[in-house]
Amino acid sequence: MAMSLPHQIGAISGSPLAADAGGVSGEAPSSATVSAVWRNPAGTNLRVSVQKTGMEMDRVSPSPPLSPVRGGLRPDLSVAAQALMSAPFTTEDVQDREYVAGGVSHKENKKGVPVYVMMPLDSVTWNHTVNRKKAMNASLQALKSAGVEGIMMDVWWGLVEGEKPGEYNWGGYSELLEMAKKHGLKVQAVMSFHQCGGNVGDSCTIPLPKWVVEEIDNDPDLAYTDQWGRRNYEYLSLGCDTLPALKGRTPVQCYSDFMRAFRDTFDHLLGDTIVEIQVGMGPAGELRYPSYPEQDGTWRFPGIGAFQCYDKYMISSLKAAAEAIGKPEWGSTGPTDAGQYNNWPEDTNFFRKEGGGWNTPYGEFFLSWYSQMLLDHGERILQSAKTVFENKGVKISVKVAGIHWHYGTRSHAPELTAGYYNTRFRDGYLPIAQMLARHGAVFNFTCIEMRDHEQPQDALCAPEKLVRQVALATQEAQVPLAGENALPRYDDCAHEQILQASALDIDGNSADREMCAFTYLRMNPDLFQPDNWRRFVAFVKKMKEGKDAHKCWEQVEREAEHFVHVTQPLVQEAAVALMH
Image 1 (tube, rainbow, N blue to C red):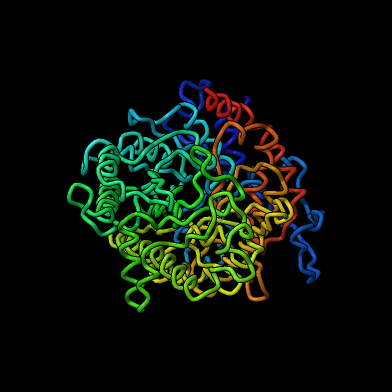
Image 2: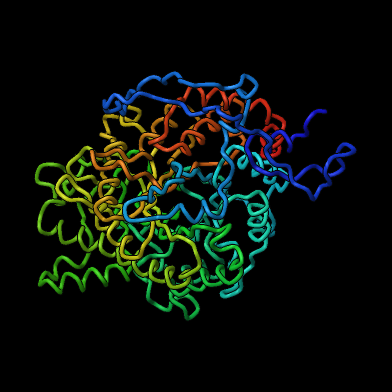
């Protein structure tokens, strides 16, 4: 008798899946589950042995895959999902995977780096329902069958509290979280206090809550402002964090109330299904200033961006800081010679390498103030999040942008305008890591998939060097590091780069350290295209193996090939449904 699709997937993944209702006579009813039936024959060794050479792997040109050395593997098990997909974590496994200083503890049954997948930005509609529900269900089932640990979803402030302050509509999110639970997927929930629309990859528009936008219209200085008076509505200016400017509440109080309402509504899922809360702290959910806005063509890669400190609240703080050090003349404005959004460093007096203002006493004062304001903003919100979710079994994380262009210059201009005081002579990521460490938060970093040589070298892009710097900073601060890819990638080169970066082999003392998680951008129809899906399945398996596993990637890829063939109907359903 042919196995139904859920039976096939259950057998391959080692995951119990609900049997189809109305199945063949004699099959289990719909309420039953189907478990994997593959068993390891006595004496069979499925481990792959690899001789260690002690030679350091070339990060740019990795060694070719090694052939397996196997013993007693039955031919009929070459299709077995047992070797391809390990069973999902039990409760004990989840408890044994823990965040510790500098990474994830290596307990005996700890395996590699768990992979999460970002959901579409518009997963919940304006009508507070799950968007493309059939597609979502098929997609989640496919992800689970591939061994994915869980999903990341944006919980939009503008959707949930969009109409009136203090009135929260969690419709759509309740359903989506229950779907994730049903499929056995963990959830990273992003408290998205920013606007969707206007940044790389934004496929829809979700503004800030209507009543917040009204307040900004009444007082435009609540918005980040550049030196030309351009207002940015992506995220409220951190200059007004503690001012009761939103119907009697401060922005930080609004964020705190939102998180508390989320906690109270989904308390039954916290620590079990919902395992992480990523707290949005700026545009695109990242701890940064909106220094490179793409909306309306304001900024184009690889421009240096512009400082965002010209609303009256930020200028007031700058003035006070300048007066405090006896330099009141430094407090009336930000740098006036820092160029425009699409300049390069050498086009400007402030950022140029020789005699640039960034490397003067004034530059050091301004950049210290500007970056410290961002750190203080992060500290305020983290303290609030920590209080709200204390003893709820969830991790708190913060995303930091991977600004890799002009990294090879002395001034690192794009990082400076974004609020990261990182130059050739100063580490701007260690203070961020130390701030996160004080609150036990996870440092989430982007651009993990990028290689230096793939980027424009005339702009001195260096994503690999940047990732290494961040890894060293998190190691010194003893804070867990997680990763994301900045742009959608489906090729083996990107996957290999992620594997290498997530291993955190940055020096000779990294043997007990890996990234604590990796989140893959993003679930869409392209991911489920046959070649992309085959590569993704193999990638997830490799990530779960961990850097200390006996790796045989050719074997993994052969198994992935078979897995993709067996699950093709389900994956095809997901791809087609997502396109409609």
